[in-house]
Length: 231
Image (cartoon, rainbow, N blue to C red; front, side):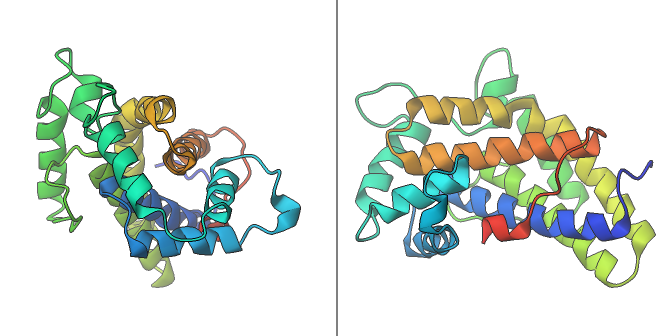
């Protein structure tokens, strides 16, 4: 494949990709718990008062955390159930499955589900994500992107540049052939339906980074993302 960056740049990008995709995948996988909230507080700690007016998902997440004296797990559980599961009086939601967004019928377990099942089987991957059983769930796809990035970073660390680029080629195919087909639209629905800035911020982070990632691999000049942004 044509290399869109140097091996050193790929190593930096892969570290950022693993961190951000793993974090957003965890946030979308189930109701927020103490472990996730600790990660959010770590992000908030990285944003000083001088950045209080900054834009973007991480800044929004930091501002939300700053308003909370304690972990707002009950508020987030209610918002998660209504936004992602359609539970509650709204009867509207952002249903986190590729099949819903890419099938004509807008139903679960359509062609995208079968394709994702084949991808996971071909890589002999069993993704251990609590409370997510469907292969085309947004958390599964984000976790797989994180796994690809981890493998690229690991191979580069071993000096296997050719192997790293081979995995990166697979990752690009998955990014453009699956994640980019629907996750930005899903995130737009999250921002429309969610009642808390927490899930709006997660959606901002996921969609903005996906679009940045796609622009980088497709050769459009962009700044290299920093791993520190997802600390």
